[in-house]
Amino acid sequence: MNQTIYHKAKWICPVTRPPMEGGVVAVKDDTIVGIGHEKDLQGLTHGPIIDHGDVAILPALVNAHTHLELSCLEKRIKTGVDFMDWLRSLLAELDKLDEEDFNHGIVRGLKKSYENGTGLLADISNTGQSVAYLKKVFMKSVVFLEALGFNSKTLPLYFERLKRHFNKLKHCEHPRVGLAAHSPYTVSPELLKRIQALSINGFPMLSIHVAESRYESDFLMGKGPMYDLLKERKFWNGDWSPPKKSPVQYLDDLGLLTPHTLCIHLVQISNGDIETLSRRRSKICLCPRSNHALRVGSPPVETLLRAGLKIALGTDSLASNDDLSVLKEMAAIKGIAPSIPPGEIIKMGTINGAAALNMEEQVGSIDEGKEGLLISVPVSSCAPEKLYEEIVCEGYRKEIKWINQDR
Image (cartoon, rainbow, N blue to C red):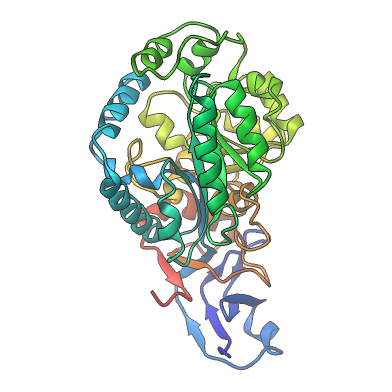
């Protein structure tokens, strides 16, 4: 049996309780068995004490939305342009890719995730190939098999293929495998309902991009250039009438907004939409740096929090972001909403993300019984009220190290 190892640092940041100066985390068999000061842990078994010095020990970060496959498109698609221009470029590049490209992207994305301190991630996958790779790594993960389809004639055959693929993978314990619907403008109402019903038979969360750009809202109102693009791609055969409602209200009318729905982006939303999300207790994940790069705007962070919604964070992909750093997403949130306490932003990148993926009992905070997925970040703060601000605003500039991981 492995011995207990005591990890000491200038600060221990449990997330679920205030920071502890000069604290210790006890880890045995990859499980946290104690947290406190040395004198508090005297009842535990003897073992070495490792003093990590002037760092803050944190739970590993949670990236609740990324696309590992698309890491192969790093620096191949120009950002900072109109969303429709970016989307056309993305589709053109995707047409050039093969299985080897996607595999290379998955490996690269996992490496970058590890380097940035990610201990739990949610991968949106069109191929399902990341399942095999994630089985081999230490981090916790969910793979959402993503569905797209707006043509009623091809829907039955497409759905049967998706169902067979999902049924082969849905019993995986690591990674967990669920389903994603790409968006309200790329998935027909009938397919949305079928995906939701199927998802109940596996990992119960359903992920979907919602209200990312004004073009999505325009499409549901029956106007805008998204129609032309879908027709050009032969993705839509015209047998659908626009609901003339916001993306959030449209999904709610279809019965898709539940506590088991993870809504991504939520940039183009109204106060009424936020009230609906709060009433349905849907999970939410924001990707502020991707939104900025694609010039779609910023999510209403403060209004979402006032409505009682817990915010998780995602990086989106390297096709729309510079890297896969959750710490940089935290800094971006602080820039968008400077009035939000840094401690609340820390939660967005840790325990809130774990809760959004139904894994808050396993990871996301430093608590007894949880997995010992821990990282350290160098800090200089001598007061707890300044500590989280330093981590949120400057943490991404510092070297992240893994604690208790011999890798």
